[in-house]
Image (cartoon, rainbow, N blue to C red):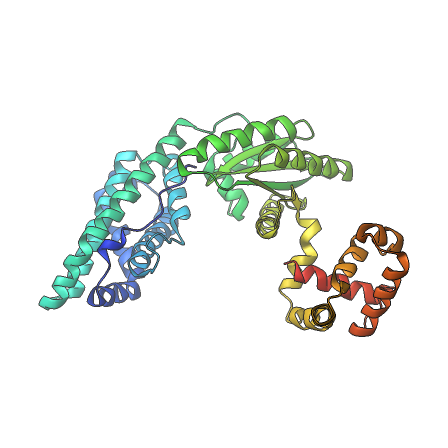
Length: 416
């Protein structure tokens, strides 16, 4: 999906204090506003009137609430370009294609949406002349937002209708969304996933490839480049279905044994090497359709780790960083970090020593003193002395299994 302009307006149209009060009142009423908008759209737009009750009370109402919230929050935000919801709003445009809502109807629904929001602002201002002036100060920003949403959704709708990323191996966006988020699957979704030819012992691993440092008008071209790289490298190793989600390329890969998982890891690494701005992350394989959601969440977790690494280190497997994710959520992480590494940092600072550097090399070289000495270009006896000193300062003996585990875990925490 093509990346949208960021939500917000120029700083020249800052909201006044009275205007902020109006917006804050409307935020408290946003659920009621969304319900009114959905009711009006259903009554006034034929294509929406034909949608089922569950779709209107679920998908359409949720999108209306997100859009109302997004607009109001953007009016209050210090950074007018910030948006927490716009990607989800974009995806709604793709779904409308498959719900047989025409582009004309989609745009008409947002015209109604904008009109109801503006009427709500006027109603909230009442007859108070000061608040009416504050309301008039909001009008340009409200309708600029409506225009921006309409333009972006028209682009998203057109791309989905034309099948911009379509291929026999590429899932429709609505089907992909259902699989990744663990939603109830339609018969069509089950037919699509059947193309993976899952055997009883098969599992599915999700690979996510994110493109960073790409200008908005280059997102689509970059996604197509990623798709080509994945077809070249990943499909050679296993049966795969692809999808595109907000510019990210998603691979659903059938895994039947450990050898196939190793092949996937190698293929993911080759993809990562082809794009300097690509972040490749891989979830663990899980069984069943519900396992897709779990593997996707893991790939997203791995992507979070990848985004914090410097420099880039190729593909990131969740199985490699699961310990990191557990550690950073622990209530005792800071305690371990302070107790295990704090004394070393203090000693190095006061004595201009290299105990922390020695520990890092020692762990990286699997506790081999000879390799550590070579890595640091010092005498092995020097390494032995430093390792002993580390044990004395921290109370954790690096030559024992328990001691080295605690010290190695602390190093991982420091790098997160």
